[in-house]
Image 1 (cartoon, rainbow, N blue to C red):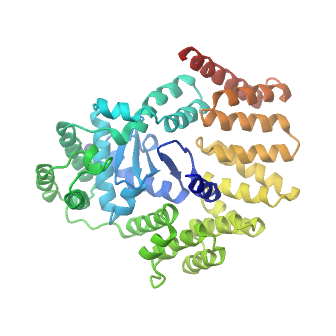
Image 2: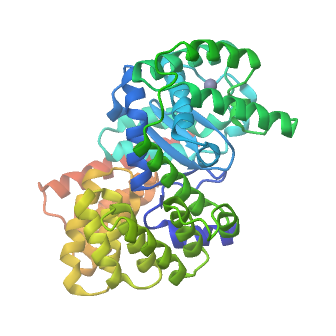
Length: 450
Ligand SMILES: [Zn+2]
């Protein structure tokens, strides 16, 4: 357990940032390319469901079980195991459409046994809730806190057959409206059914357990899908290529390197294979081999921001922060993506060169302004302020970070410390006051509960 955590710590702090690390492996994996892909892949379906794409987010959870669920309002959670098992983007879209059907139906947890099992998982909800609090409004935060606990329980919930068929039909409607074929959905359900037959018993927290599958369900879906005008519509090649990339990098990131290298052997010279191997080598601490894979990717696409990001990440994490700056700067320029900005800020700080601190502060401030769920960016910003002798704003950055992570007592203390040094009436002062107030209220509420 410890060894695994350390390894994660070593790697995660960059492009794949780990948000939460609770007891039961409910880790949210954050990655710029993956998030952009998820938004584009699900956007048309979300719109077809009559929801606002801005408000619906698809997150990836580091969990090898094949599962997906909705919880916490309009969040769709997809296990890394499901992405690894999906053969194409159309299958993933089928799953997401079905999950959106559960959102529209307002389906809730009904399994009492599931509730009991899940009580130990809380950190996921804390992170979400705290992020909402940081974004403003304790009330909004509390709302998500409750819903977020459902997210933590999501893997234990089981829907009724009526809820499943209503989500199926809703999902089919969204696919049709978005002009996406139902073939992938059908393939994926059949694949899951085969898996369950083969294993004889349903897996603990598999998709089949949380969304009971039946031959009848599949038959009904087939009838609906095959007559739809989109049935024979092929998968969009650029979207499919993006899917193969994020699938490969995800596998490279979460799997044992030996497994990754078996799945993507050296003989495979495709883009996804180079991508997966880059992570495998990087995880096994072979920076030269990892860099060679990154360079192969850049030879094919020299200005791909995510390949530049990868190269910067490998250089930074193998102790060459100065070399990481150029590729990361270009990646930030191309995307203005806050997770990549955070990585650039990290590299600039890691050079320990005073001349880089002004740029570090600027890119990190840009990152925290655009991404409210990135405690690591606040950590880095605190480091810059500290180095520049600005202890009050360093304390404020620390308060932001603790608040985001749901560590209310620490957030309160840091915010109080920041208030000592900040000029009254400034934006930073007011912000510190807000955090102090919200975290104090949370601390007092926890005290009352005990
Ligand atoms: Zn379902």
